[in-house]
Length: 177
Image 1 (spheres, rainbow, N blue to C red):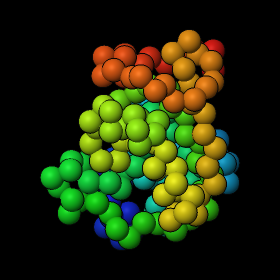
Image 2: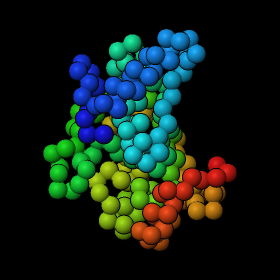
Image 3: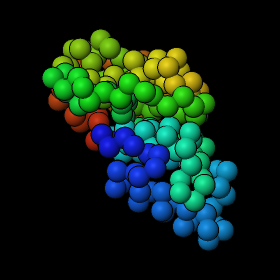
């Protein structure tokens, strides 16, 4: 996630691999190049959003762009990894009208709002509410959001959330959604 150069010599091995996979699949004719969507869960959601935002702005080596991204329990991939490493935040955010669907738990290690983030003592960037605001206001993305409660229903953030509950919910797929 922290190798963020996607133009020119791409430093991120995962991004280079995904670039090649997309370009190879489109070349087979089995993938519509106007309908390439990225989905990620947890760290895959952080990376998937970062990749999709950059690949909406700047195409893969084969000339393909991402159409949208769905992130399950992931938030701001451009924040510093820890409060002590503030120099790692990406300040020059990509400006793109990417459709983003944020799906996350009402209680998780990726907090649904700033209050839950503070309550759990999470690292920077692990607050979906703040990330949504950045996506809409600083990046220009179109965002939809779904918060999933522990029983699988949609609902608001869980106000009383312990780290044990957050860890359990983060690794459970929301069946029925």
